[in-house]
Length: 152
Image (spheres, rainbow, N blue to C red):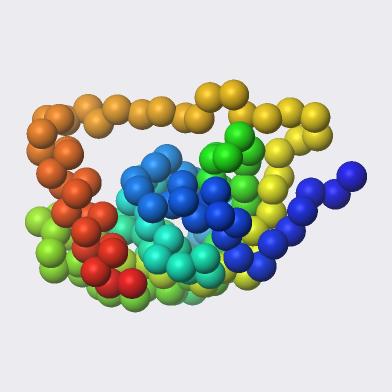
């Protein structure tokens, strides 16, 4: 039985992308042409057909999408695993509202596919902890999310 494919984010997935969460982004390496995976947490879906991401301006992701805009964002939410295919571009070289040098990436969604294997569900979503100052991490996370929301 084939998994359902949608042209936009379904409601539970859209809701899950209203705050920081663990996701992985697959890009095509600009030098080797091979797949490249990066884990990121600063994501926000302003609409069901777009996702904004904040990444370090020195990240390999930037050069990769400038050469090859096709990307896949992997999200674990709604008791499943989703593959969000689309085209990404650098929407802003620098998020001025944030003390770190972060670039703003916009992902235009082409398709959303539930890729969970048959007869199973996610029983616990990935959790992570910031390993630096908890107060500073919380403040930075809020600044980044506020900036993403502002730039939608």
